[in-house]
Length: 193
Image 1 (cartoon, rainbow, N blue to C red):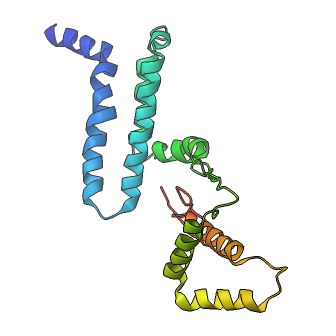
Image 2 (tube, helix red, strand yellow):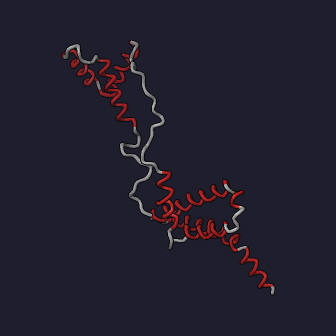
Image 3 (cartoon, rainbow, N blue to C red):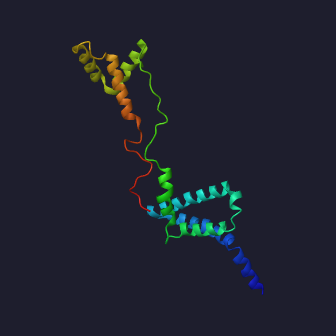
């Protein structure tokens, strides 16, 4: 009779007892094992799981009052967590690849730090000297001399030396602006789950 009532309590509270084991204990153990291996596949599986687990936790915290009205929520969460955790199903990789990644990883990057420059960067004599010094530091004295001789040979209808220096500085700055490269993305499609 004592063991029967114990089994009833365990059966009634199965979600409370199994939930932390499925959602925390086993994933923590598997994550530690994944860190120790050299394979990146298991690392991705468990990083993906923890991302999804954090989404589930945020969902529960945000909609706690609504979730209270659904008595099967704890069982649904338990079964969903089993599907995410068990390597046979590989559910974490599936959900991340098909739902989370398309929403969060945007291939188009927007430069929020872009500040347009003024049209007339060099307006004072000190600016002209500092621009000449900077040009010499970046390109060398021979390039500066060839720029001056090029200007002296060409007719006056072409750009002035200052305009030429400004154009070269601007093109040089535009080339060096993107620190991550021309085709930078946060994730590439070369990884596997």
